[in-house]
Length: 174
Image 1 (spheres, one colour):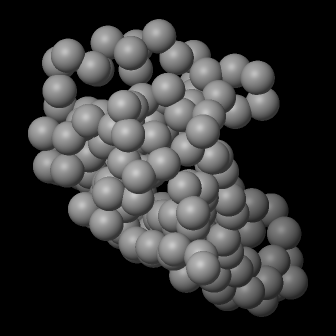
Image 2 (cartoon, rainbow, N blue to C red):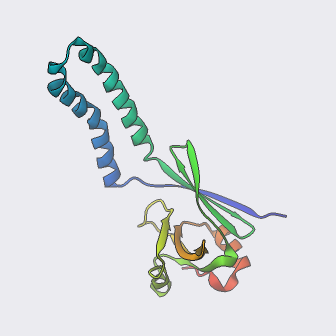
Image 3 (cartoon, helix red, strand yellow):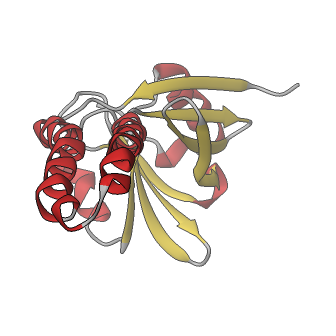
């Protein structure tokens, strides 16, 4: 019988995200005014007639880019296998990590100084958390395609118990 645990984590927006969204929302207006001032005096009424379509296209593009800032992570644990997917705007899904607990060197809290030095020795890192300052963030040191990778994620207690069942000496809690 397969044991299956799933958890969704929504990434929290930072001040940088909000600033970027404001700049992207203002871009269609700035570009349209620039086109109006620079190019339209040189051309005829055809350019004036195209300007509303260009503006509408730029607004739609800004909308798509702003919506792409809505990011969620889905953690799936099945019989000791961890899969992490990124979901962008509730439309597209991509697997960013997949690994077996047999390939994990360590699962420990991110805030724990005793084990966090192990995370400094990895070359690539996957950040799949809502906010790096939140509580309950753990990291996994695993081998992926021949190299060490560090994965930051926010498991619940059921996931930690499942990993403890498969790799009892490598799972540490707070």
